[in-house]
Image (cartoon, rainbow, N blue to C red):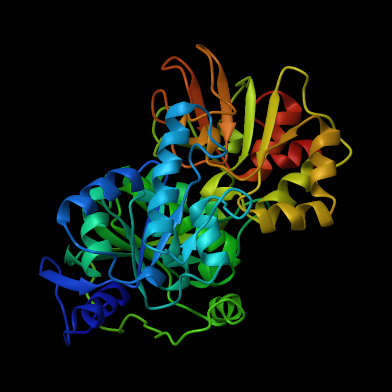
Length: 421
């Protein structure tokens, strides 16, 4: 029996010829990630271990992005703790304000993730990096501390599920819609502790930005990881970013999967996940009349260049409904600069939106877009649980950037086709 791509990566990092689902292994990690919420806890646990320093200062990334620039005194203290730890241990990949971005947009951009690598991060959306053919998964802060000290961590080898997309996507359908379609099909716990492998001509046609979006939301189905086998697009993305050796892995033809699902892209239109679960999906043609108060375009899910270009295409020459607050957050400083050079920032501002420095901000109810009781927001973020973006009596609707932009103009949930005619 062959192995899946996830099993091959874990086996290689455990120094084993093969692994099987359910097996407990100890594996060497290629990168350990923490942010300004999770790293402080890990740092305190690390100091309790009594080790002199980290296992490898080049294989740790500290990215303050959730409450940065600091929103209050507590956030400032958290960021200070991370900053001082980075200086003390000479962490190579520490990103201060001015260099930082939303971590899961920033690390691939900076070449800190490569195909075939094993990445752990004290953030559930670390699974984003599976788009590059890496096994990437979120862990707790105590696991982060152990990995910073030893360079190793224990894993239970997950079963794999395979999701195959056939055909050609309809207009305005992207990676966000494909992953929402899966979550709507199997539910928020349908892939619990599974490696979700995405394949088929529909995935091959996706840009890297679209693939990052898909793998980012594997956790919203309960997945341990989301992963896509590297192809020419992957190698083109990493060729000028990654300057070290890496290994390409693919699933064997006779690999065993817990479940294989196949979808026809002809059946998928832009989707909206209604409150209060990402599985509560409806096609845009069936959303009805849902007025909104706010639209957010950004986050580690949809804050990349393709997302901003898509939103700007809808917004150019048009105005946001006066009852709607439009907030646009580029994923990194480099994305922000490129958006400026392409005139996208001007488009957003002229349409009546505001543009933020890169930050997680409103995604987790942090700041810069908190909702009051009774308010509704359409957002390109990844979660819409009760109170996720503010008051427990507010509502978050998840959608792709084109739908979010169209809705901002219409003042209600709307299709991009409705705006562009």
